[in-house]
Amino acid sequence: MQAPASIDALISRLKLRHLRLVVALSELGSLARVAVQFHVSPAAISKTLAEVEEIAGVELFERGRRGMHPTEVGQEVIRCATFVGAQLMQMAEFVQSTREGTRGRLTIAYRTISVQPLLAQAVCEFRQANPLVSVNVTEGAVGDLIEQITEGELDLLFAYKDPRFERSELLSTPVVDGQRLVIVASRSHPLLRSPKVSAEELTQQQWLLPALGSRLQHHLEASFQAHDLMPPALGIRTSDIPMTVYVLGNADFLAVLPVRIAAQLVSAGVARTLRFNLASRVEPVVAVRNAVLRPRRSTVAFIDFILRRAMDTGVLTSDARLDPADVASRRT
Image 1: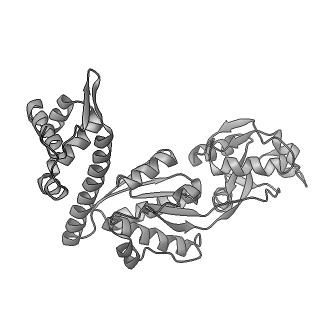
Image 2: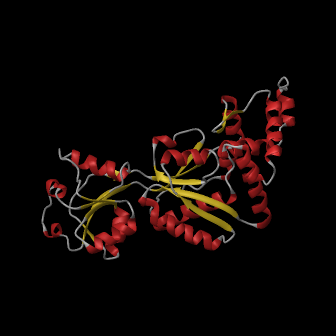
Image 3: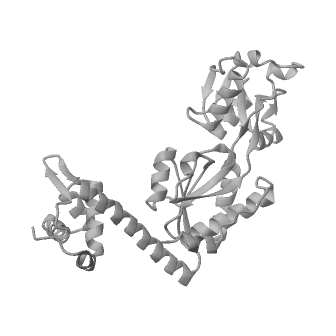
């Protein structure tokens, strides 16, 4: 392997195909698999990898019987190559959308039921107004979704305000105000006939318990611990709204919900609010996005769209639209 080139020479010699190759190798782990993906021979892939490592002056991958694994230098090259690829994709989509109108893709995820009704309405109306935008709603753990945002794979994450979002590479925009939590019961639940319900009585009931690790679970447990009681443990654990609606409509269960979600179930005749003060509130819901990459035109359009819906429906009391000047000032 030749002596490594200077920084200027290295930059001038590296090509986009080199960067695409190292990213593909990190994902697929073998020359043969990458060759199939790129529709070329394994020999051509091997030659391109040799070019990259000759330019870098160091090995980027360790070869073994179980595949190829990036070296320490290779890991950093892959990280940077992934970022560059995301920026190039953003640039291409921006140029195309400028030429042809709002189009491209929009990938979003949400981690709270507090935003579910607003998000569902906004996605439907946004897609109708922007038929050339492909909308994808994905799932995952918060930590994984944060990484997808930093790598440019995920455009927006809707979740309760969280210390993990306080990073320089992330921006958060409030979309739903914080709200108090209430207990709802099936319409025929016997506790609805009680003039006063005690916390101890509640622990003996069947519940639709919030998902493990969720903010609702945390607040429900804290509310009962304030009464020196173990939190409810009987029932079904789910944060799925359709499941909640079905169970409340067919059996005597209790559930803890943000007050606006509860009001919708009461209005639909599915449940009634129980007379018990949990004395607990959930945090505001924020839209989290990448602070380094220039946002896609579709992302900017959707944030503006959902914020207008949030203001119109009263779930957000202060206007916090994405300011283009703010975006420009944060670009690198």
